[in-house]
Image (cartoon, rainbow, N blue to C red):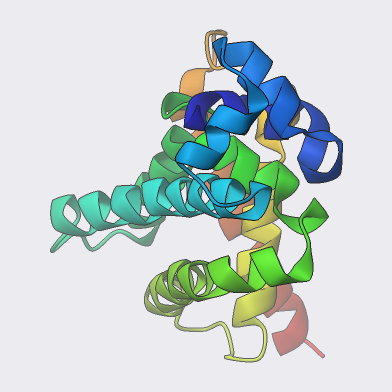
Length: 190
């Protein structure tokens, strides 16, 4: 049921997705969904929560693996790869979270915001560590640029291609770091 709901969210967004369609996808009557969830909102809160939890878990796994790694590019690339892995290797939950979250009603989004805030805080801390020259006012903007680069890949990237997720992670990391360093150079010459 959750898989079907996530797949529908990715394909259609929140508003266009109905419980009737989800039920048909898994071969049950729409009313049967209410045996597990009180409402459409409760079902999608679970889907969105699982999507962000996959990303948080991937981040934590990299934390443990990267302990003591000093090269900023290697550290950042490992986290970028983990985020991309969450998008492409863990079903539709993370993709649904990324693509359909903002089409959901405010009440539903507000139930997920604490999980998102925690994940974003982890990235802000990582970027502050990796890019100490980046001032704190620009840090959230840099994170949003990086998230934009990573999250939009689910719309166009085929991980089975020659580049693969490792190559994509490297490409995004290199371009992001070069952009941040260029911005800092530009600011220092003014």
